[in-house]
Length: 348
Image (cartoon, rainbow, N blue to C red; front, side, top):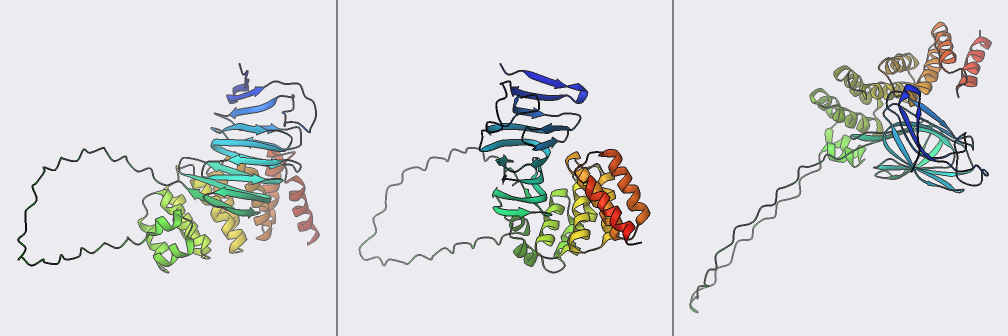
């Protein structure tokens, strides 16, 4: 029987097999020597430290399960939720997130899985994606894959029995009349939604037309459609159009948890594609206020410091840096934040 370990009021359930620690050449182990098997959070996030220096942080309502663990590779399945991974070199990792699988040897990245979509964001290094989108993804880029809609099952219908009809005999003198051919209907043209789901973003943009993204975003009734439209605009080289769509996503669906992801995506576009640090800082702050998944908050707070400094807002940058150090005294961007402030003081 697998023992269950309950950690505080976080309602974290960690299922693991207790075996004696031997060496780093064998399976990865937790700090106490246990071999990790399954982790599930409910109310709070949880950081898991491994004996090779790797770690991963589970956001609330997240479940991951180990499916392989030896001296060569570590395999996980992300069933739901958000996880921030920090993989140390020396061992291959494979994360199955449904529509996407992530192969990595050393990188810092986050994976988010829900019923509607799977998203991977790389903060340092690079990962290899397999599944619906096979490609190499490096920092600081992300990729989101939406799930196809589940179509209702067609009920089984029993066709009526055709009565047997005796063939008629045609006189030999009767002329044979040619039958008219029935035209075969042409296959329908793919819609922009279909093209977006198949990752044909440039073709989807051409199908919509130059003003089509803005037009469709005004009539969009779901957040999924707005994410599709923003993906079309971003990946077809129209970041400004994507910003317009993502602003509407946050405005129309403020109560949806993914609204924070929309704000974060807009922040990255302002910072990395449009080089607009002022708008980027506002969007990073908005994403944090909307309740980003905890696996993404530390990076967003670091980018907030970075954007405010790039905008010339030294007071705001120092306030954001102080907030970062208070929340993450041993954070992975601690030195980077200090270096930013040091460079800012040196330029005075």
